[in-house]
Amino acid sequence: MLPILITIGPIKIYTFGVFLVLAFFWGTFFLWRLIRLTAYKEEEIFDGLFLSLFAAIFFSRLFYVIANFSEYGFNPVKFILINGYPGLSLNGAIFGGMIFGYLYFLSKKKEFLELFNYFAAPLFLSLGIGFLGLFFASKSILFSFIFSAISFIGGFLSYQVLINYRKGTINKSFNFVLFIFIISLINLFRNSGLMQNVFLILILTSGGYVLYYFRITIFKSIQGSLSLGKKYGQKIFSKGFRRNKKQIINNKSGIGKKN
Image (tube, rainbow, N blue to C red; front, side, top):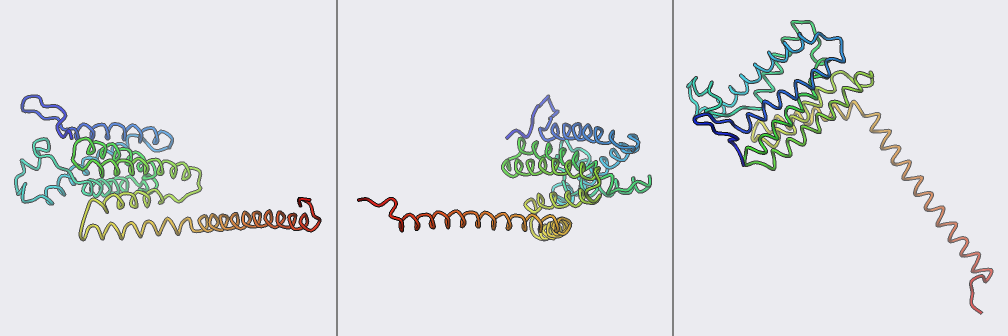
């Protein structure tokens, strides 16, 4: 596709890098719009965001270098020069960002799971834009496009969960579980071996939580569908019975017979 967007002498501007900047901009803007709806102090939230972002970049790079150690070795220059030696790990970014975000908000006596309701949708939006960058920059265009679509869908679902959370109709931890489920679903196809099994376990665990949480709603929906099907079947049977009964009466009375 188009891994390098612009080349100016020795400087190369990578397509994926441009999309990462766009992901940061739109994700941050969306988060700002959501935080304005709350009583949280914007400076504390964005201090936590930038700290988590730096940690996400560091661990993303660290995980990638470790996974490709034969290429990078113990060379700190290659580690730092991302533009010359590109490569980031999604799992490393999520791990680093989550850990440092949790520790920061814990130090500020803010509940992480409650705050994550406002971070989830912007985070999915950023991931969707990032995968869209991979779609244009890499050869794995089909999977990148699918992952991007899943991330955007996750963003929409997370925003709906946030609305319901603010109404008090859903648990504060549900957005975090939804995030784990969707990220694990994406990583299930991006990994192999042991890591694939780990993400499969996370999918089953988070999916089981969702089913348990909505067990009453699901049961009522199934019960309602069966009841509707039963009523529809009874209606069809009743119409057919009346039609057959009318035909029998007509036949007995001789109506419709030819002379």
